[in-house]
Length: 318
Image (cartoon, rainbow, N blue to C red):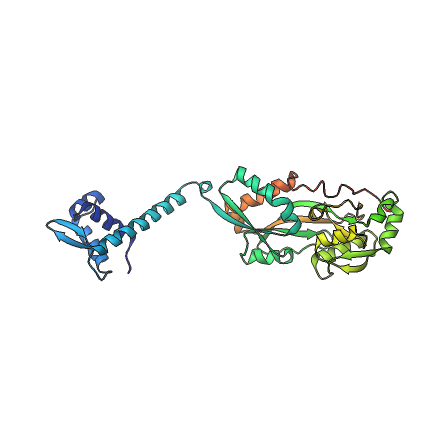
């Protein structure tokens, strides 16, 4: 069955008015043109659409079925035309945001609230993706935009077709065992302790694992890694229980707030939280709105990590 929208539109008018002459007057066609369209439509069907009763055309059961579905098709066409001709902000658009642990915990709620204020048509949906493969997920169109990571000591090479927007830069802190609290006021002793103590770090084969070791090197610390742990909350809990030292950033500590002593890591190493998306995806106003909402939240402290490391003290190695 291969009919056209014009044929269905004409058929609906003929069915409503009952004669081709009346339909021709309403549509501005000749009666012959209406007759040709109805003949072409009828040729696609095995059963007749009309029976004649004098000059009036009456719908058969087949005609009644087609009229019902023709109305649905024409209504859908009208809605699509209205949606595409109206302002984009009037229509709901789904945007898939790739997220990972600490950034998701701190940012999703305030970003959702920001979007409700500035772009209520955007339906942002979070999808957890391994942060290591976030760029690949973006390039493969699995997600529209993503939260990603970059490290000052182990920067990610730029990838063709991906735009990266800096959202937040945060320092590394040492999460210490409770017994080390007395060393917070003795920088030299704390640095010596850090070189002698056991450490809890992620695998060296991961981006974060490489970054933590390079950050320690920048701080003149050679970590004695005894425990290899990927999960941030577990690493912090282990440090809290006295097992060793680990590294975390303020946002990471939201995953496991702690009262154990925390001290900034010397050396100036940082972790960047970035928004990454294909340049083509950012041409969509909905994706750009999510990117802007992320930037607003991280820039204005909506992703608040101030309570995560209240115990952090500043110290400079001697």
